[in-house]
Amino acid sequence: MRAPKGFRQDARCDWGCGGGVQYPMPFCPWCGRDQDWPDDNTGSCPHCSRGVEDWWHVCPWCGFDPSGQDLIGAALARVRGLLKAAKIKDWGYRVLLRPGVSGVDPRSPKLVEIDRDYVVNAKRRTEIPWRMLVGLITHELGHSFLYYHWSLSRTDEFRRVFGEVHKAYRVQDETWVDFAKKRVSRVKSAYVTAYAATHPLEDFAEVFRIYVSRKAKMKELFTELGRVNKDLILYEKFILLHRFVRSLRGWR
Image (cartoon, rainbow, N blue to C red; front, top):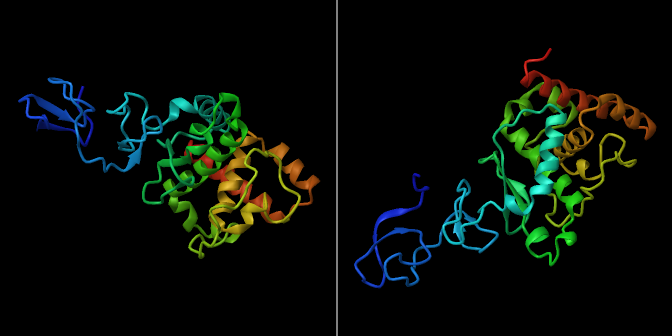
């Protein structure tokens, strides 16, 4: 098996026993003493909090999944099932449990970071907000999907219904959002939820979340939009996303 990026195979034991070590390793395989090496990787393992790279599959410190996906298997399985039901092709995304706020960096559109405090700080598995996590992951995947298919944001139709994505972003990180809610909000007639009205990027991510959560069942969605008296432009947002998803699968 090839060593992941970041390993130094020509290093020697810090304690001078003469044994060769392959960094990063938590201890010398020859004398058993602890090894010290620069812990400056891009990510942090949710199991041991040591430095890891985003695309590593095994943490060299503790041997567990450095992305933390093993801790949220139930939520990820649900999200993947919803994406499959909505017939959205996998674009190679990777979900990571990381300290801090949840989000996606436009420069790394496939990497979806989820605040690990929702999971690692829970004393019991029953304390983990699973429904909220499913909604949060789906929302952040909406950002990832758009960043990965950025050409969509440049189309005239996208700009007309969602707005200009380069609008100044002034949304507060601590803004509370009910990601567990699958129904369309009754407030803000041109938006699927109140949070969607904060910025065009959040608007798309919320439309994506509701679209996926409802398994792309357009008839049911449109019935609900009519029941809560939504504006025509919101219908157009769902139609735009639906048509784009279909185009990625080669449908007409």
